[in-house]
Length: 83
Image 1 (cartoon, rainbow, N blue to C red):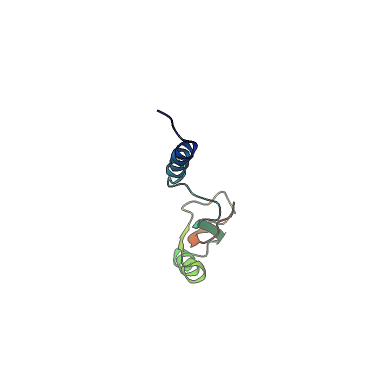
Image 2: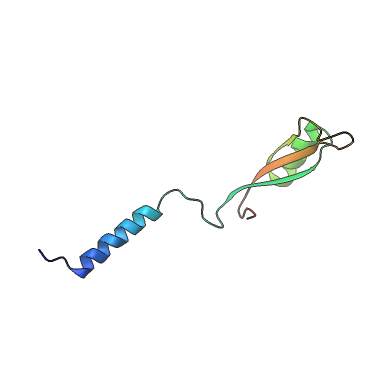
């Protein structure tokens, strides 16, 4: 049985397409971004994050050290996450 070159090429293309179609995150794909600033209270943290980024903001539970203020951490959806 003789196998033609075009048939082999077709099979290789199908295998390549199937193997590369897994749910991998590509460069430039949308994802989660983060920003932080000094926490001025839980309510203000959530409000600023929601108003500025349409995200979810939470203050750190513990201060990183004496005299160091807690941070407000804002997680939001962004089209082009930093690399």
